[in-house]
Image 1 (cartoon, helix red, strand yellow):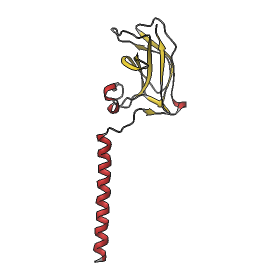
Image 2 (tube, helix red, strand yellow; image 1 turned 60 degrees about the horizontal axis):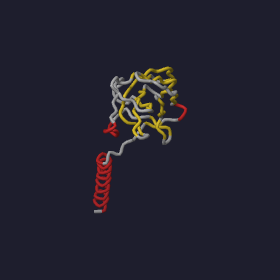
Image 3 (cartoon, one colour; image 1 turned 180 degrees about the vertical axis):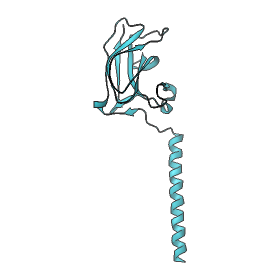
Image 4 (cartoon, one colour; image 1 turned 45 degrees about the horizontal axis):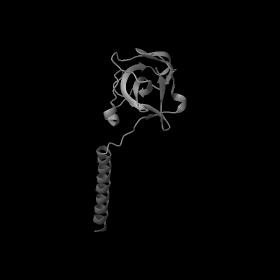
Length: 156
């Protein structure tokens, strides 16, 4: 009888553990608790971009240090936040200099644009990031601590 009690108690504990694990994962998916960016160490990523008054067709990034294959993304300034995307260029792991990011021809540039470094975590060579599906986008921006790796660039 004691043996049946131990087996029964063990079974109840195992079922409770499995149920709790399944419930936890279900809650995480239901609330979309996913990372908001790719966290990297400060020494593994860098971005240098000079102001470029009069730029209309392209932005030139002076230097970028990418911890892996990555993307440079140009956004319009939307009240201090990255707005509509107007240019994207891929960069390989390591240091790249004088990277030209072609801008969309019909883009009405704001006085400043924001250049952001994104990881290439999805299908390699295909930029997969959507502001309206941020949590589900594999090519999220890099963060050092709580700061996005981004620079404001004056184009006026």
